[in-house]
Length: 326
Image (cartoon, rainbow, N blue to C red):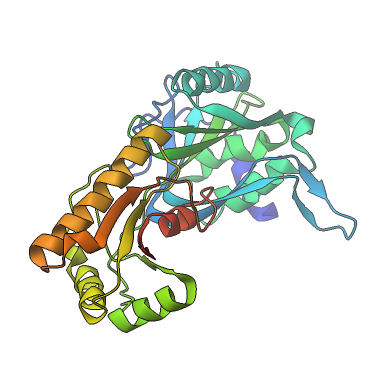
């Protein structure tokens, strides 16, 4: 780091990049860039686990650094670093993004500036997020190196128009000694992980054991498109085992209960879960010749979670169909 700093110091007062320096990089669809900024670092993952500081950086009694609060999130993850002109200020960048986020309906979870961010907050952000050649070009690192002790930070949380949970974290450092300024954006969207990569088949015998022991069984192999109630073809294996369960136990009557996570409006999710439960019964009766009189549909939305809805892993568990013995 000392060698790197010495090299960078000799190249001080670099001009703004003429254009974005990362091939294929682009602004996030939810956030436009601050005026005249240029992308100097970019990374995108379709699905990842991310820990975002959401509280002051502190050191515990044992001397171990950490945060008063941190969010562990899962979903589609985008992170972008920008340089912005030295004629602008960190306060101006932060206030513009705050206003834009509030206008979009996102609420501030945590914000801090300079010493209120806690001990060596800027050091943490630089070391953990700017390293490993994330930024393209030594001169573009300068704002984050020289401005990291005078930084500002914000985390905001909200829901998009289509009901998707989104978190945005913004770290801004000021221009120093006639160098450009910099800011770093992280966006985590609660996008469901691509399913179907690993199969866990719950067969009719397993379902019968669960119903005998608990009076119900959760089935995760019944699939629907987002905000839709049509049963997808990929559900065939699970539906076949449900039908076999009912055929092998002719006296069994069940409630088919639809569950959702807590994303979106509750009233809408109640209606959606009811339609999905109805669709499962219709498919069992039509395609598998199960007597519909043995089945009753009920949609309960997010009223009966089996995991926390705060992270996508929990929300995936909550999106399910249950067979409950009548």
